[in-house]
Image (cartoon, rainbow, N blue to C red):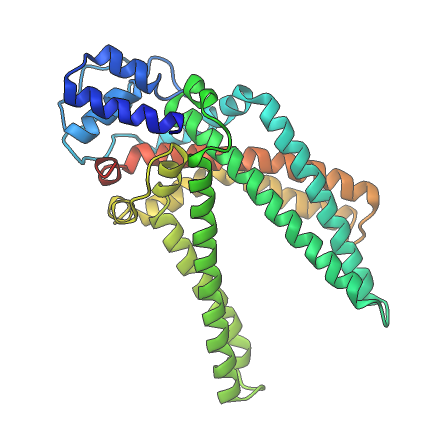
Length: 341
């Protein structure tokens, strides 16, 4: 049984047998690693599951449970500050792992740029070899799959650091059940989004055949289908966003509980993510503007390399920040999903 599974099983047994709180906390870990003097995770889960009255906390306490199933009193400001702080501290907590993931993203990112240039050159050349184009496309797919594994690993580690603390996060194996549950959840939701996009495309094709190729709908339908696909996928991902942290700490997924906890909070969750990521979005916009003004569409080997370095660094911070933000939103909205454990 994974370390996290043993942790929660021991915590449940301690509640039933009446063991004292100190032994329960020793089994569970130190709790959140983002603020000093914060409430232990055992007391948070005990009050969320059993509905006990909140204990008198210190100045840094943020886990405040009123009754069983209540949401946690975490403000938007605490989410913003805690996410940025946890993202930075989580990177410093596992520097060797982060360095490996950075090198991995750098190499695969550079390979993707070179493969795209090869595809563009093959398409521009008259009578270019078809197998070269297919091979480059396959290489792009392989790089994307490899990046997905690395991104999932970094996200899981940051979520564990933010929710369980530095020591507990380091004590859990990298490729444990929590990692594979998180990765499986991402793949499943991605496949559902792909299936929905295919269905929308089929509807578009039949609509186009019915109205003719030169009708106004031929120009409006692709845009409408893209907007509907992105909107539906975003809605589902946000409504089920609590499952990602739940899977990262090794707990079993409870789709219905996650859906209930986020009911009526779609816009707040989306806006918190957007507000926290605004600085990183600004960096992307600035980079694109500078590139178009200075370099244009010309892509040299040197620029491709330094673009890969910048992209890998940006991805490390963006993934860490997004995962830490998800962990804080998990504290803010998790209620039914904790009772379902």
